[in-house]
Length: 129
Length: 129
DNA sequence: AGGCGTTATATCCGGTCGTATATATCATGG
DNA sequence: CCATGATATATACGACCGGATATAACGCCT
Image 1 (cartoon, rainbow over the protein chains, first blue to last red):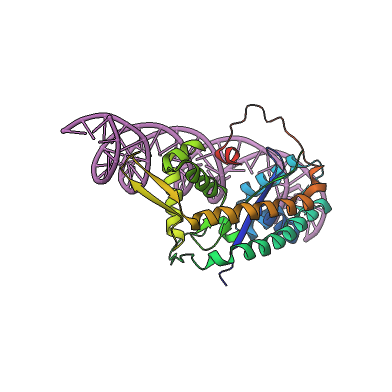
Image 2 (cartoon, rainbow over the protein chains, first blue to last red; image 1 turned 90 degrees about the vertical axis):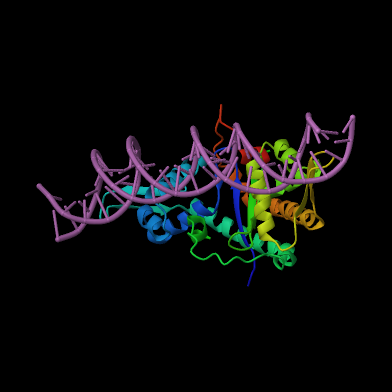
């Protein structure tokens, strides 16, 4: 317990970056086969989800997702193999990084003041972790 | 070239977290011996700087800075040994993390779309790097 | 005594981010 | 042939963040 949580973002270039929001969304899309459903699953507005996916589309030459309109279930969205690799790399890096951070900051953990935090609004970031 | 930049934050508990903003500010305070001067040096408003230091004060039992009012030069602020250790640990972790990230995301770098980014406003985050 | 530069604090305001909402379009199934 | 549920897109509103500004208190130095 009391092990610190690391959150990180990788900035490839001016506009293109990947952080916890996009990765969580990609996972939700992968698991639900739908952008709207995935967004609902993680408590994210459709607009924001669409903007993030759009940003990813503008970021890499290789597509991260493929979408289809109409049809049996109204359409859907799938994560490409490239997108899946993005998720994998991010999550694996996260694990490696977490152990590094835990080792280095473990002594400091002792001096952290723990607040009651009663009735605090839970941010989207917190929900996604 | 084209090596990705990593930005990270460590969340110890609900309110207490350490990221690039606070660390850069601490370094600026350490180097200038003053909160206001340090804030000016990194292009941060005094209000924000004060709030960040205040947040650090609420985060750890051990003080990160010590301040004095009045006197020869109007007063000043020093970074404690604990604060210096915070900086050190963060920067060293950053270096380790950067090599990890670079190794893992190097192939993906090739597919990144580079935008012209002409006339874009430079954010504080970008200035701090 | 008064000036100076700092910490410390309050108030106001504008921009930005995100949510909510509305609407068009699409393709399949009943 | 139309209802459905999804993508895709625009607009409007609210909240929050951060900057700008003002002011008080403080202690050394001239």
